[in-house]
Image (cartoon, rainbow, N blue to C red):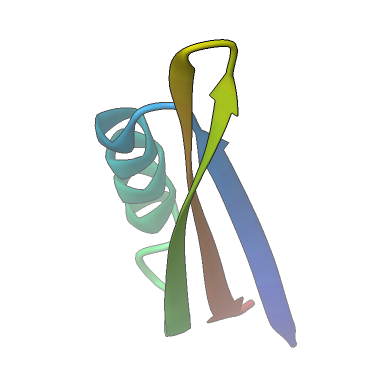
Length: 59
């Protein structure tokens, strides 16, 4: 059965840590794909980043 796990972090290093921890926890599963995206927005004069990833795997 295919499963999806999504991640959303404000910093790329936080996303990296979360995805790596998840991949280690499912080391016996088959990874189908990992999608990565970055989005930005402005809040007042501050630029805000959103780093996200989606892992598709077989459970």
